[in-house]
Structure formats: C-alpha cells, structure tokens
Amino acid sequence: MSKRHLHFLLAATAIVATLSLLPVASVAQSDAKTGKGKAGQKENAADFQSAPTPTGPAPKMPDGKPDLSGVWTPGLSFTQMGQVPLQPWAQEVYKQRRDTLSKDDPEGHCLPAGVPRISPFLQKFVQTPTLLVILDEGNIHSYRQVFLDGRPHLDDPGPLWMGDSIGKWDGDTLVVDTKYLNDKTWLNGQGLPHSEDLHVVERIKRPDLGHLELEITLEDPKTFTKPHTFTRTYLLRPTWEIQEYVCNEFNVDAEHLVGK
Amino acid sequence: MRFRFKVALATGFTLFAAVAPILAHHSFAAEYDATKTVTVKGTINKLSWVNPHAYVFVDVKDANGKVTTWAFESLSPNALSRQGWNRNSLKQGEEVTVEGYMAKDGKPLADGSIHANSRAITRSDGRKVFVGSSADDVTYK
Image (tube, rainbow over all chains, first blue to last red; front, side, top):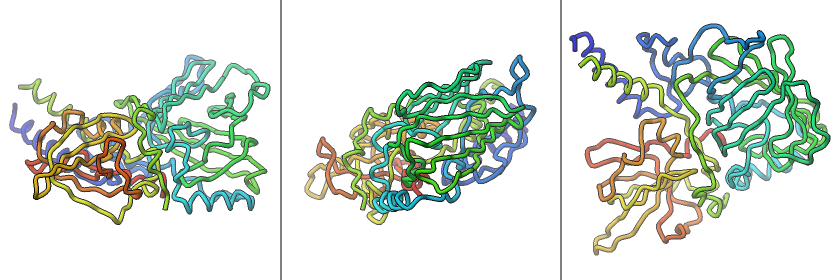
C-alpha cells in the first residue's frame, strides 16, 4: 500500500468512525474522491441520510417515457404536508389523536399506511411500459400497483387500504389517480383524518437521475374545506436495497401504547 | 494489499453512506417517558434480532446478588444494519452499559423483564453500538 493510499485510508476510517457516532439528523461532509456525485451534499432538509445522490440525466423507457425505477428514500420530506384546511369534525378528531400522543396510530398495530402516507423507510419503484409497482419496505411491507395500460378505475371495489391507482402520462409527468381508500388510515403520524371519499392525485417527475419530485393533491370535501397540495422529493440510493421488515413478528408495543 | 485496501475502502463507504433514519412504527411518547431516563450496567442475556424493533435483554445484579432482566427496545433490524450493526454486534454474557428511557405503563413484558427503550449501548471497550432511539423519530413530531 502506498503512503498516499494509507493516508487516505486513515482519513476515511476516521470519517467513518466519527460519522457512526453522529446524531442521525447530521449531514456528512463531502468527499470528492467517491466519483459518485458529491458525497454528503446537503441538498435540502430531506437529505438527512448522508449518502451521495447521483447526478446525470433521468433514464428513459424504450418507448421514450421517463423510467421512475430505483430505490428511493424520502428523507425528511415525508413529514412535510403543510397546513391542511379541516372541517370542524376533522379538527376535533385530529386534536384528540394528538392529545393522546398518537397511541392509536394504525401503524403502531402494523396496519398499512394507506395513500399517500409514507415513512422514512425506502421505496422501490419498478416500472414496465404498462405497470408501475411501488414496493414499500415499511412501515409495514406493502405494495402499490399503478396501472399504465389505459384501464379505468375499478367499479367500486369497496374500501381498500392502498386504494385503486391508475396512471397516465402528461408529457414527462406521470399522473397517478387513486380512489377507494378506507377511512381507517391516518394521513400522518399525528393523526390527520380523512374519509372514504379521499381522492389522491400524485404528479411524479424525475428531473434527473437522482431525484423524484412528487406533487400530491388531496381532495376530500367531507374532511377538507378545500383541496390541499404539497410536495415531496425522493433521493435515489443506487447502492441500497429494500430489506425485510415484518412488523407483526414481535410487536409487543401494541399493548404498551398508553398515551399520556 | 491492494485488495485489502479496496475492501477497507468499500467498508468505509458503506458505513459512510449508512447513517439511517431513526423511526419507529409507533409513537415513542405514547409508550415511553422521555423524562424518565435510566442507565443500567449488566451483562447481555440475549439479543433478539426481530421486527419491528430489535430487543436487547440485559441481566442486572443488585448488591445482594439478585439478578433482574431488563428488556430494551432498540431500532428496527434494517435501521440497525444500515448503520453497520448486526446480530453479532453484542455477545451473550458481555458487559454493557445501556442508556435509555422507562416505559410509561411500568408493566413488564410477558416474560417478566423490565421494559425500557435504549438510546445507546456501550461495550466494555468504550465502543457504542445500537446508537439511536425512536425518541428521535420525526414521524410523531
């Protein structure tokens, strides 16, 4: 090993040792020697996982449409919804859930998150010309199928945990329309409610290799006084993979969630 | 030598990229009391590498020699593994110091062990493992 290599190795080891002790929200310093974009680049508040986000043009499908495939992290953007204008009953429910410290969150009981709620766990997008599959590592393992083959929505399949999703291209933006969601899921960890009339439209763009931009509109006149739109940015993690997360294996928490 | 250098470098960058999000599938505040911190010294009884949270069982001996088992909830196995830890990061019988928070309901787990949440475990050589707690989870804040 050359002296230069040794120095580099020592420096890398020191950085790793330091980083492994850092609080989670910290952002790593850049190391230009990775050759994989700017390591630890502080892109926005969402980039709290300190991994490099690759740069370059977004990949295309053989038919010329953008390919959204990849392993994505939402970083902190999963918490950012803005102020949702609520009907009085919904304000009351929201307050009650916050006052009891989210003890009744369906996710605490290993139930699906619904749409569009996500957690900071990874999501894997797998796209074919006629289907987009979104594999959610957690909070519980779940999947979404977004049909791109032109089919209409199902004819009232009854309330579903993850809804019925169809997608259409608007230029380079995939517009995903989701209906038939049940009213059991919360829209966030604090307990934001919704009704079975919730209609979700996600406009998904991949402006470059490393980023996925989502503009999400919630329509639910029973719950919201007007439609609400917010955005999320996902970051590509090309060297990461989704992993097992079998929530019900040893969920001893459920019986100890007492709230206040 | 070149090979070893590359392996070391790869390991380094794996860890470099692996500072993972803290999260739980439940509200920390609904289950644990952030104001009731605890530090216990004992020996590893067992490490349960299970979902949705790994559990670390620690035997603590009092002045009279009586042994009490504590059960500390840690992060999820996938969150721990992205930070470079695995089920061999703690060995049965080794001495550790665990910092954590007590459960709110004061009730033991089904096996009788005292229920708490860990935020860091220090091994006898001073090295910290399993650092992080759902107390830092931003989902519920």
